[in-house]
Length: 94
Figure (cartoon, rainbow, N blue to C red):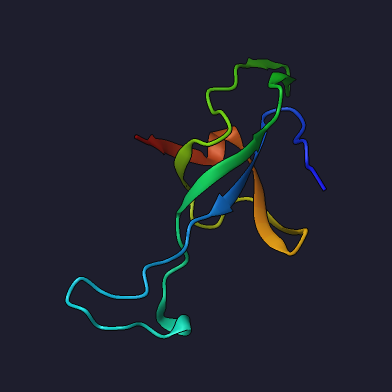
């Protein structure tokens, strides 16, 4: 199944959290922080959103950092993805 976001929304897939600390300590699942880095899976067309012209700056495949508690999590073909507005993305990682 494919998902096509509307307006200024993007679909992201969170990257896995680190399982070890820098000093080599293995973290159990409950101690891992939620990752704030993700890969963009799909991008909406932009256009007029709430009376303002929105130009999409993200593209499929971009690695991004997003706000910690933003977006809506959805299960799609057994994978968890998050749908959020482009404005909730803080930066593109190059």
